[in-house]
Length: 426
Ligand code: GDP
Image 1: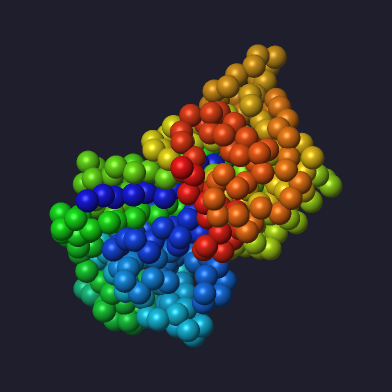
Image 2: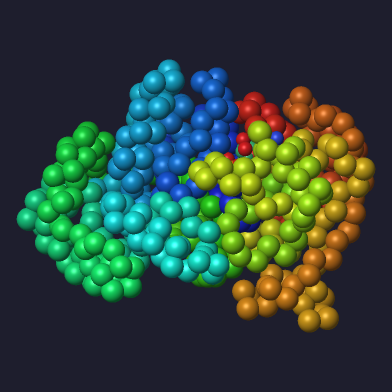
């Protein structure tokens, strides 16, 4: 009996989707427990290349039940469009369940996301404009709409009316935009609710029963530890907890059930959006790493934005693994570094003249400067290797050195974007 979490140790885009897809075959359930359609997991398997935004990464395995838990920001249009895309590309209809307590992303959440980023101008956060911050604000303001509300028209209308009172004041007086009418949304939401009905259930009961039957459950995190609102680079964080610990809340799993936490990190760093990124590299050095990184260059799976690039950051990754409570690490994209004579690794930060190996509070991050060491490269294509002992000596040394710096065993090494390009380190 076990629950495994697969979560990001950094800023997101670590390759969690690939690792989840690779490990899902042995699981009965894959569950998303936070975030929404605001980040993408790239998966390459026998059906082709997919960018999943909302659907759990187990959807390619016919024996896996894929669950969207109550902690997720459920974008109904995205749910159906992703599902349709899978089916149209020959993927067998996945087993999907959606929590009746999950809350729904509404059209005005996206509108407010856009208006607010526009209002902030140069101080904008680099939102993906998928409505996530306004959605979670409404949730904690107790103005959200749960899936179960879609089947109770009076309640739905009342909830919308309550939600739009303050929004209309903002629209009129802050953003100079036309106000919104609750009735405008009701028919569409009810229709979407009817379409969703076959997937809706009490997923907490479903998962708890599965756990007690002894099924393997995989909880799939979105973004990474440094985007966690409590522990990350606030305010350049996301709006829901990106930590493994939150899976027990956002999916309704017993806290004592989680006994394995796989923190995913790249063999270098990448970051989308604004905010402090201490080890960022620029110009030709960054362009080359970006061009060679990922499966087709490092560009956001949701936005297509070029990712900001850096070398491996041991300070940030050690901290990311700590707050995730990682029991093992999956190191991805090792193959990408095969072009370098020497590979820089950030081992410490200098803040106001003082050296530290601890990840600082956001107020100090802007002053932090990276301190690098260099490790020898292997100058070869390692993407076809399947056993750790067959990696070139310097690639083995790179992995073992990172492992020592992070302080958590690296159990998996991903050396290519495809499902089978993975090495289990003894
Ligand atoms: P996620 O959101 O954490 O799942 O990460 P993304 O899918 O946004 O970004 C990871 C990128 O790395 C994608 O382009 C993947 O196809 C790619 N990728 C994952 N693992 C590997 C790997 O080991 N090698 C290479 N070259 N690309 C990888």
